[in-house]
Image (cartoon, rainbow, N blue to C red; front, top):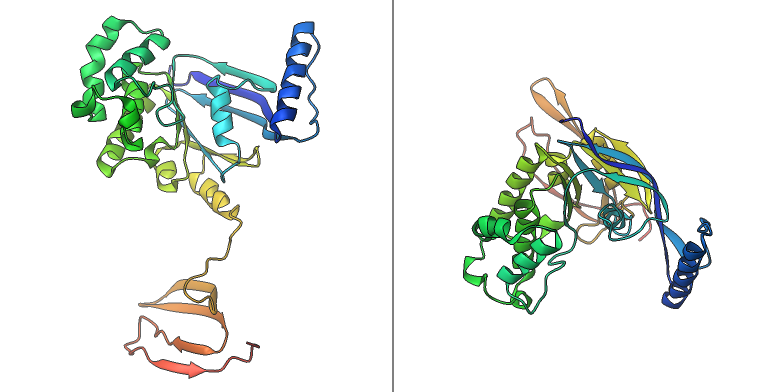
Length: 314
């Protein structure tokens, strides 16, 4: 059972239109074609773009797949397609088992109803009986740590309280075979984050988890596989988490970080063992100014200050 394939994605693509009026016109044309039995056009029409293009992967029971990439890479769109919130334009998706998803903070909650009422409503939408909710509601409230506010309208909840309640419903009430998480651990204090991480570890024993995050320490800690996305495409699919994280950082547009005035930049820095000491080789490009000499760590020397004039033009 541990090797069961719970999620299978083959050639999934989704396109959007940049203009609302044009998107509505295209939508009506697509509905008309479906009613008449005509095949949908797979080519990009004017003002359209591929939000997700040609994605393939499998997730087995006991695995955690991490989706990483810059903002707008298509991670959340792919997660919504997997959860059935958006219909793909091409491709095939197989989902085996009960699905729990936390894609948007407080998604599905009625703001004018209390937290307790929203728990029961969400359960009924998921097809769960009131008897089951009665048996687990104390556990949900205790996990979310909102005992004092359980009968308060959700519209007065902070974003952290909303994600507490949403995570508790998704991870405890339905005990899913498949769990979709989209940056849900980015909000909340450290104690609740640790509690959520422990719960995710428990679910990973019997579930398949798809985790979207920009938090690389969490990615390296939990994911057994990582897919790096860039402009809707899967550019890397690997079990080498470190390789995937390095590739993700390599996609950053601002590859040079400026600290201070930016008059000096470190071009290369190497640390190499040399017997009992350490050698430092540093190459610095700078304009005229003041620098501080750094002594080798294996030599007892005090830092000294020197002023110099660079041949580079100001």
